[in-house]
Length: 207
Image (cartoon, rainbow, N blue to C red; front, top):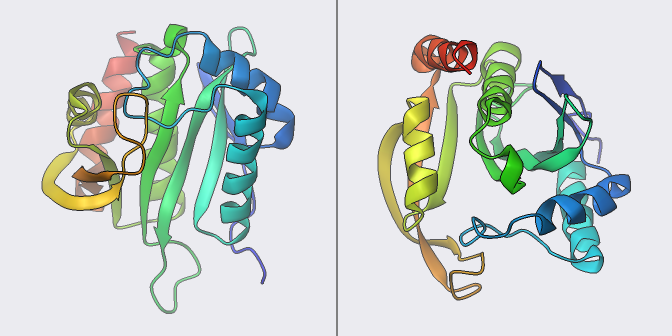
C-alpha cells in the first residue's frame, strides 16, 4: 500500500508543526509531565514506554492514511510542547486529496496553553486543510463534558452540530477509561473559512 500523504512540516512565527517521530518521545514525556491538570479528557501518556507506544500507533495509522500526526515545537526556545493531528481523513471517489478531515488529538504542556502558539497551530492546520487540500469540511470534536475544550472550539468560530451519543471511548484521568463517551461535534466548512481565518489572524495580532 502506497501512502497518499507524505509527512510535511507547517511553520509559523510561534510554532512549527513537525512530523511525529520516535526521536520525539523523550521531549514529549517531558512536556506531558510539566502539568497534567488539564488532561482530564485527553489521552496523554506520562512515561517513556506508553509514550513510545502512543507514537508507534500514530505512525502506523499515518502509514495507512488515517491520520497526519505532528509534534508542536515552540519557536522561541525550540522545545517540543505537545502534539496535534489531522484524523479521520475522508476521500471521495476521483479525488487525490482528502475532502474532509478532523483536527484532534491535541494537547499542550501547561506553559504553552492559552498562548499565541495554540491559535497559530489551528491557523496552520486549517489553512493547510482548506487552502492546500481544498477540503469542504473540517470537524473538531471533544468529549461533551469537556467545557474548557468546547469553549475554545467555539472561540474559533466553529459551528456546533450536535452530540453523538456513545460515539467514542472515554480517555483522560477524569473519566472511566474506554467507557462510551458522548462527543460534541463542531465544524468549519469551506464557505466559513475566510471569516475564521480573519478571526484567528486578528487574535494573533493582538497576542
